[in-house]
Length: 234
Length: 237
Ligand SMILES: Nc1ncnc2c1ncn2[C@@H]1O[C@H](COP(=O)(O)OP(=O)(O)O)[C@@H](O)[C@H]1O
Ligand SMILES: [Mg+2]
Image (cartoon, rainbow over all chains, first blue to last red):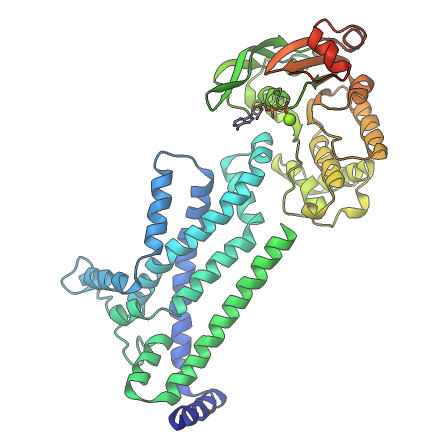
């Protein structure tokens, strides 16, 4: 109990004095997860929308595959990315293993299916609502997608935030492909795992507070967004 | 222009779940005036309107407006039985069809003001459309249909949720629209309304045209016994 109490005190001290390590690790976490978020959103938002409005032969199979990918254990994703990027792997020459880029790749693979799936759900609902009107008004495919993305923007933001929440809290995959190297690939989650193992609860708890704060902000934003979405229906 | 507004159905059939819900129907609609489609629930009124508009998938036959379908639909507007509101403000709902066809912002603003005033929504322009009452939604859907000055206007039970006063307003608006040369094709459950607005009538039963003719003649002496029973308020199946 004493350990934890003194750990808490030290953690507050680190936060208040804006400890250099703590700031650095936090910023790297944000950099990796935000990069992954931007890339994943650029793929998943149009993909999810497209799956919602286009009828094609393998549509059901594609959606099933998407949902299956969403359930991939992050550790396994880490392992696969590791094998692909390792020296003897197909992309070994790029020398990406144990860099933030490798971590971004792993996170993109983890959160793209999640964002695409949430997008697909929301867009399918909106498309069902708008379908007759947009067909009647003789809209082009591009006009339809633009209208859906614009009117569904809250749902899309919610999808992206959910992806970010998953990325920032993820530890298994980035531990494997990033290696948790000090000053290079150490991020919030991997640092917490390490410091806890070492018994340095001060830094671990300080980082934990930051992580909790980020997760709370994200979840609160999702809550607010989905409530306005339901209430307003617009 | 006259050709644009004349629709002919050639053996049109719409099938859902292996059952023909409309047709086969072969019929040439008059080229002007207001056609009113009546019939019991599930007779296929909505399906017929959608078929004429070209948004229903036919399993047989065709609809011919004398010009390519895309161009025909560009000059038509359709008000759905349950109004579809974009999740935007009333103003943005009215602007939407105009922006699709590249009308300038200034002109769009002018038309929005005009139609919002005409339909009694001027004070609600900045309210979110999905939060309007049922009747207000129906009026908005009608204004949004008229704002592009369609040559043909389809209305699927446009007054279903409206009170007496609003219904009168809409009816006088529809008479104006018709006078300005717009072809109106609509369904209604209100036989009084049909008498007030129609120039010709279609009576649908079980997906087929059971009776039809100029409004005066139809109401004075319907040819088919089913139509006569329906006008008398009897239950027709
Ligand atoms: N997508 C569908 N699947 C199966 N049946 C349908 C579908 N759409 C309409 N129907 C049926 O077709 C018939 C005609 O429908 P509709 O044209 O909406 O009738 P009305 O507008 O005259 O009430 C009804 O019996 C309805 O249940
Ligand atoms: Mg109907």
